[in-house]
Image (cartoon, rainbow, N blue to C red; front, side, top):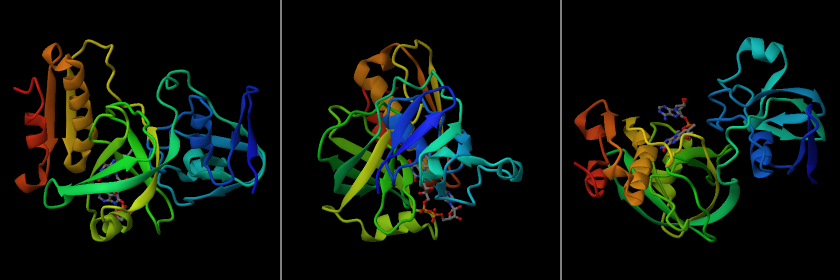
Length: 262
Ligand SMILES: Cc1cc2nc3c(=O)[nH]c(=O)nc-3n(C[C@H](O)[C@H](O)[C@H](O)COP(=O)(O)OP(=O)(O)OC[C@H]3O[C@@H](n4cnc5c(N)ncnc54)[C@H](O)[C@@H]3O)c2cc1C
């Protein structure tokens, strides 16, 4: 199947591969597409289809209300074109400066347990690609209908290593596959980086990170980014971590290892 042309109302256009989504293809083309979760949960990427056909990868996505569906609104992160399209969506100006996301080939090199149900999975990319502290990627886990989003817990530092802290969700399809079958040497595609909740190095304010369970992963990346740039000496970083029991809280050891922790 060939690529399709996506035309926006303002005259801008971009090319979308036959297996790509509107949101990701627009970001790959360098447009500041509106989005946050990339997983059908937030609705930031809602748009109206004016002409053409799309396949909806997640028809029951929680982000779309009945009213949205009645009005023909769709999610860019779940829409795969089946023809050239004309769409109505607002391209924002603010999100443009982040690295352009790409589908990257990677190999799992090692894993280690952080808590009883959170494991760190460390991947090495075939080709180094940078990301910003706090960003996430979509892991294309073999056998899954849709990719799953996971935040990087390390900092790019060259970009070869991308580490993820993943919580095993009871009956979760992707996390069960990762915890039971992912062995060092396993290869998969990592699509990223994504996300606008990243460390702003040029802002001099203190930072408060609020995290629960595996939510620590992007916060750890932000703390590591601050430590690496020396910002921990000038800006205060506070962590508020939540869990159902003490055993659910991890990462303290990794935080204590940072220069400036106190
Ligand atoms: C931007 C973003 C970043 C994320 N970063 C991380 C991360 O760093 N680490 C991490 O572990 N997860 C993270 N997630 C969640 C992750 O993408 C998956 O949703 C989660 O791993 C469940 O996948 P699964 O296939 O195992 O479960 P599924 O088979 O998709 O779901 C099984 C059942 O569990 C429910 N469920 C799904 N996710 C959760 C959850 N998180 N807690 C409780 N119940 C759930 C579902 O509604 C469903 O009923 C992130 C999600 C987003 C959108």
